[in-house]
Length: 188
Picture: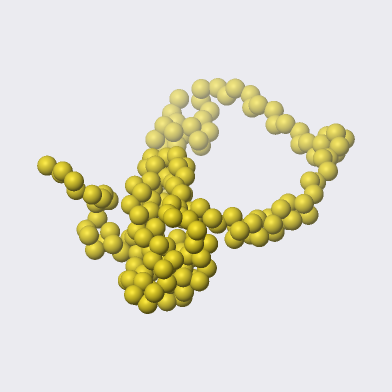
């Protein structure tokens, strides 16, 4: 029986699972938002919240503890200098999980794991997109006269053929064709 056994195995060995969480945690610190499956997001959130809580304290021991999870010194510096001070007054709950629905390929439930207070960094990134949308004005629609000039005449349907005539397509459908230099002719 599995009484009081915490955590999901996610179909991985313990070393693979720990490497997965390290990689996702590094991506989360870098981008402040990741898209992953719902079970992975639910397992990663407690780890990430403990890392951010350690970042709020800021001692040497905490930096070394965080360095065991985030293997890049630059990302640890970003966590302690940029991310953790944002949450100095918040007692916990630094991350949110937003469900996205099933993935197209295999139907796995997808989710976004993001920092709660990330709007300040996301606002400047959205501004250039709006500027590009304003610059690209819609093209004027062609007039009706232009459409008539561009229209091509329709092909008329071919007349019905007698039984003796057969096209190449019909020959290939019937098993004929030009395979290895052999051609078949339909006999009437």
